[in-house]
Structures are given as C-alpha cells and as structure tokens.
Length: 116
Image 1 (cartoon, helix red, strand yellow):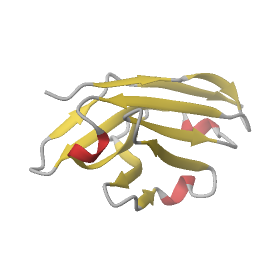
Image 2 (cartoon, one colour):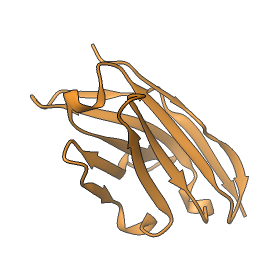
Image 3 (spheres, helix red, strand yellow):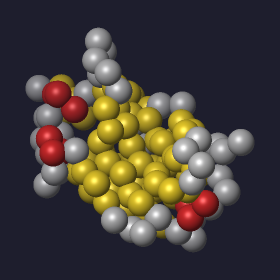
Image 4 (spheres, helix red, strand yellow):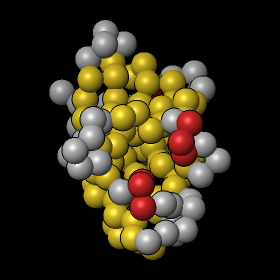
C-alpha cells in the first residue's frame, strides 16, 4: 500500500507563491505517473499537474505559466511550485500516484487559500 505525505499548504494573498511537497513511498519510478489534483468547495476534483515516469509533464491549461511540477528521484518527492496565485486557486490539493496496473493512491490533502 503506497503512502503519500503532503506538506506546504497555507494561506497567501493574491499574487503570492507556495510550494507543495509530496513524499511517495516505494520510489517514484514504481508509478506510471505522479502529480497533483485539487478540489474546490462544490466542485469536482481536477487534475492540476502530472509528471510521467518518462519525465514528461502535463499541466492544466488554467495554471500553465504559473505552476511547475518537478520531482526529486533520490528523495522520492514531487513538488508543485505555485506562483502568481489567484483566489480561484483556493482548494484542497491532493498528491496522487498511479501504479502501472492502474491503481490510484492519494495523499490526505493540504489546504491552499488565496485571498484577494
């Protein structure tokens, strides 16, 4: 059973920055892809950024140019650098990992609140 432990959420003003971290048990390369989702109140969970085992990233259009996903293979950790934050980025952010057989694992979620 995979364990995903997130950190780095918090409250910032519009235009501010935050970096989320997620340490993933078993090694990043065990998974087909790892990344971040978010869920705002009353909305469905959406994929924000994913990085595949090949290193290829996929970023949600609405955050391109502001958010960057990266990984540290030695530390089994992925990061989401979020710049120029907007109030609409307010959500609970979840770390996600998908095994090669399609099994999904989730972190506990970390709150990001952006005030105007």
